[in-house]
Image 1 (cartoon, rainbow, N blue to C red):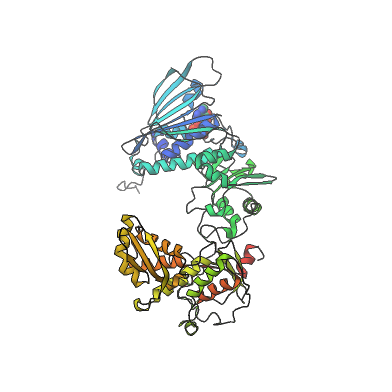
Image 2: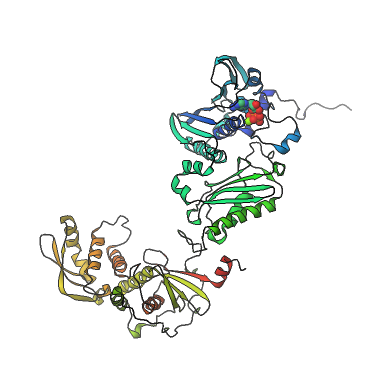
Length: 602
Ligand code: ADP
Ligand code: MG
């Protein structure tokens, strides 16, 4: 039987070298940043001490990438061979991969880049006694020029028309800024891994980044991210028989939402390693709020036999043996560094690691806590000059006895004050072993706010001043105040226009406490006439907030135990005890379990 040839199967053919090169190139060079990476790595492998990167762009595209180094350079025959695929001076056999000390070894980069662009190479080897170097131009993988030329020692490679013959790849390039951002990320990582090399990056002739040669990574960090950050950093160092960990980490308060400053180098190779990144995060433990990413610059020097660098065409990932030991060591190095820096676990500095006490809406809070307990008798009288005035303020927010049981049960438990910290924070505990930290100003502000807000216009209480206070303002402020007189009267401020931008204040709201405390009055009026940039709240709401803020016990005011207790008791009677009117937390809770976890008891 003879085969019919109507539907022939696919024909297998050998691809021509130029197609092979283009396909291979796609793996190594996917965007301008990877060209920069490969060329810088070649310069480092050539033992360059200074490397200059010049990027030119026009029409929203990167037009040229030029890398100039003062490394070992190449003799003419090597310069030509360098463009051949799998031509490398770095390894001779597969065994060499076990002890690789260079960044490159696959012999692919130059061939790949030249396959998809126009590359101009000028090079002269170190120690050459002539002026003459070599110039080679390769375009789309084809040799265009090769001749002698005057050249300094070292190598300059210019890449233009990147992806001119691979339109699909070109189409996938992002905006100029995105491509430049990728380039920066890679360059910063390499700079940090190689502090002993000086890097300079220029974009259209303007210097973007520059590092000096230094023996210390911290100098490079300061150069790139600023000395403010560098000063905050905590050194890390940890040694195992097969590995040393060194570098710097930032206190948890500087943690970020992105990974841009979590930089890891393994054997001076800037890599992305989820294993190490996670170990660093674990080292911060509960110090790090969820979904925050620490700032850390770590360098791992690992026995080369344990690192497989040949798992990724661009070598941006590596495979590690003894993963568990390495992960544990990194975690421990980080937590030891944090501990030695006296960063005793605290509820975060910028964003609390522990949630402020805001209940989820479906959580029944009303029955959770016993309704009333006797106020503890931890009373002592202080002769502190501020005590009397604080007392006045607190008395204004004390509800009459009959009104003390709130309609709904308290949302926060009954607490006993056990101390204060920094004149700002009250410390309290419950009978169920919970520790609370309360911001005294924020808490009192909340209490005052709800009371002022609840008062209906008719109910406002104002107290007449024994002698009226004279307010003298600028013409601009006076105009604002004049307009506010009726609204102010509704809140209990009775002002009289005395002419010539002067006002007489005859009465103020009772909640503001001591009538003689004209400072508060002044603050309220100043806040009111200041333009409100947000304009999100109505006039009355704004006034209420200002009165609450200015009338509340200030941070830094020393309270007696008894006064502190009164704040807590008053806070229990509020509708929303959790935040001040501006949304900042008033109270933070630590359970025994939280503390046990922080002290690693569980
Ligand atoms: P690899 O770096 O993997 O060896 P490349 O294609 O990147 O492969 O480079 C090929 C060879 O060209 C290198 O092995 C090196 O000998 C030479 N070479 C490339 N760039 C430079 C340079 N900047 N200075 C000196 N030699 C270089
Ligand atoms: Mg290379």
